[in-house]
Amino acid sequence: MEALSSVSVVKILVTGFKPFLSEKINPSELLATDLGKKFPNVVTSFILPVEFGRSYEVLKDVLKAEKFDYILMLGQAAGREKICFEKIALNWVQSESPDEANIVPSTRPIAAEQPLALMSSFPVDQVYQALQKEGLPVSLSFSAGTYVCNELYFKVSAFEDVKSVFVHVPLIEEQVKEDKPRPFIGYAEQLEVMQRMISVLLLEQ
Image (cartoon, rainbow, N blue to C red):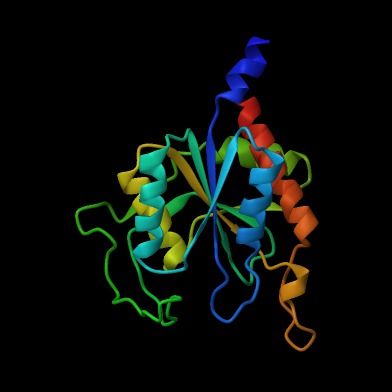
């Protein structure tokens, strides 16, 4: 009974992003929403705008209202063949593509007073190794890019005292067009991986 009690108090915030760059679906939004339904006593789901600066400002309000043990930030990465656990947040923003507010940021550090990069405070290796042993399509990544995903990740890593990680997920089949083939992982399989990730994380407690 003690073990069940300790697991029940763990609070995990799972964020996803709205669709962006002409996509009609963002699998991170679907995953975050469904994980909240699958783990209603553990997971709080929240969907963020794909906007430089604003995504973190919106998230800050959520973190002020409730304390979490972990934050899992999910985002779509077209071209990725596996679900990627990002180990490093880079203190840099650079993009030729606008965000959903039609802003193209200037190329610069995210926070001039901070280090060039920050390592994740989340138990990335332990969770990754457990899922890899199960034969699930996961990978470690050392570049979260320089778009909104990475900016959010860096600000959370630098300014929030909570174990956090960014997870990039591939496209799902519905996003792939016949005339433009791209790597994808079916949604059911992606959801299975994320459910197992949370289950492994809870067992670590």
